[in-house]
Image (cartoon, rainbow, N blue to C red; front, side, top):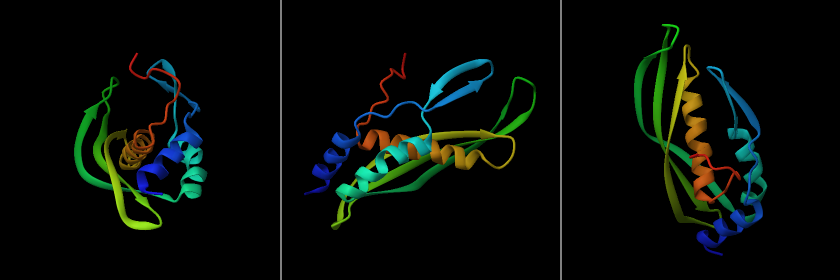
Amino acid sequence: MNLAQRMLAVAKDVSHIAKDVTVSHYGANYKGLSHDGVVSAGRDAMIKHGVLALPSVIATRYSEVMTSKGKTQQMIDVDVETTFINAEQMDERLSVITTGSGIDAQDKHPGKAMSYAKKYGLLYGFLLITGENDEA
């Protein structure tokens, strides 16, 4: 199979990922989709169909933001190119570019941003759905 056929097979095997975490942020609570939940849902199908996904940071933007309580936090935006590779024909590749943002008072903002971008690279690359309208 070529890479597009392999990616389609992964999408058929997985198709839907349920939101698996509750996020509380400044008094608002909503359901979210964790990085580990996305990786866990797609990992077996990717192995079965011989698809690798390698993320690479292609751009970063740093800034400081002020919280509503007057504290300064570090923010980073990362653009990540997730390259999907046919494991049996390594020169066959497709890529998707996503952006992730991370805010933290200490040193966790790069990891948060990278996890967000990687998660959406997998979701968009395999056309996976969460069953909810994220844009509502």
